[in-house]
Image (cartoon, rainbow, N blue to C red; front, side, top):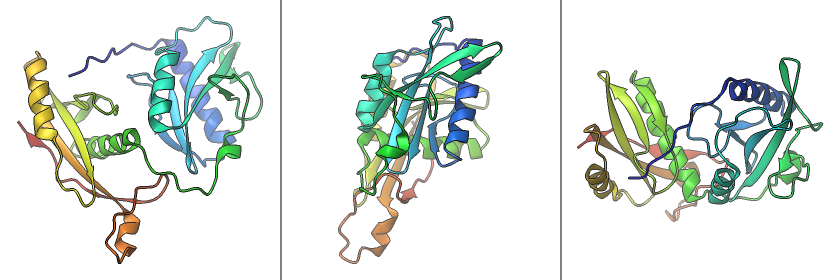
Length: 248
């Protein structure tokens, strides 16, 4: 099991998050698909989204250096590297009571070079195979949605490969955890049971554990008469087989 530090965001963070989300939604004319769109920990990034076949992870910056913002630049670079995607910053400035981007257009700058860029310019027609981190995040999202539909409260979650538990939720007013694993068609098993055992050996809360195995295939597989697995490509449809939690 891995410990994950859960920071409590400041009011400035919530205000910047809200302003940044509205700005990006507006400038993209609703074309972006959000990945992280909630102001909740963990904070490897503050917001993330997909535009076409490209994914962007961003941190806010207060150019006046007054606001307390959770997370750190290393976390941003880590998740962007895991997704083989773009790490960027959104410099913001408080004018009166309103937070606004410093730069025109999208307002984004490269996290390493600090050069402004337009995300649209990076979108291509290339088929980009989804990374392990993307697929794990997708599997965690499938399980989160299932738990929410059953009426359970999600406490926190993480999608980093190899970091477990993946989800904490409330059942009958008691916290429980979930190890989420996935496999790609035609594989129909995971090593999730072994991971659950490892987590039980290291966790000391007494909380009950669960396993969620998510089996993923490209939706285009149905059209593949050769029955050769088609890699899951970013932005393309996916088919999912998930039969619920197994309690341990």
